[in-house]
Length: 154
Image (cartoon, rainbow, N blue to C red):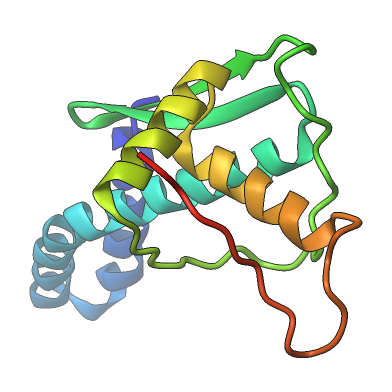
């Protein structure tokens, strides 16, 4: 998906809004439009990534991921075989998505990447599904002090 038309529309809208202010305002809007292009492109990519993650959590037999090629973003849908995909638990909350920084040992990260690749989904989709299953599974502890624990052996 080429993001350039969306960025051009943003620049054109900015120029149209600045036009009544005269030539100096129009020139400032042009400069601002070019300066904001990288930030706007990143914001569009983040929106696509968040949308792909949300769609993946709602699909039981497929995953959606965003793959970058140069300055373009491709949305890739991967159909999964029913025998390899555990039933997806419904998301605990259908609210807005949020970002989370997760720190983990390199060996665990490698293992998670391998598991996600084996299922044909992104690491983000795999982690969202694992966390969703953990917080909505029958083994969930009750009360405000609940926590999820485990270990990984390399």
